[in-house]
Amino acid sequence: MKAAIWIVMMVVWLAGLVSGAWWVWPYFERMELTGDLVFPAVWLVIGAAAWLVAAGFGWQRFFRRPPSSDR
Image (cartoon, rainbow, N blue to C red):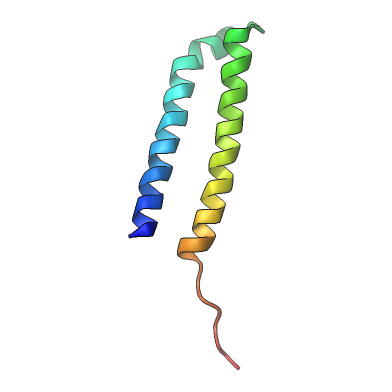
């Protein structure tokens, strides 16, 4: 159950990042160095990095294989 909740939360978070990129895309196309481009770009980079860290921790916690007992 915890793994399912984690997956849903990660999907919602990723949808938020994609939505943010969608709304900011016109500023990326213009590539004018303004606050309208810099602040959302920093937000997206930090959000994506945090998403990757959370995905790694969650993957380790919920989907790692137990160590084999070949001894």
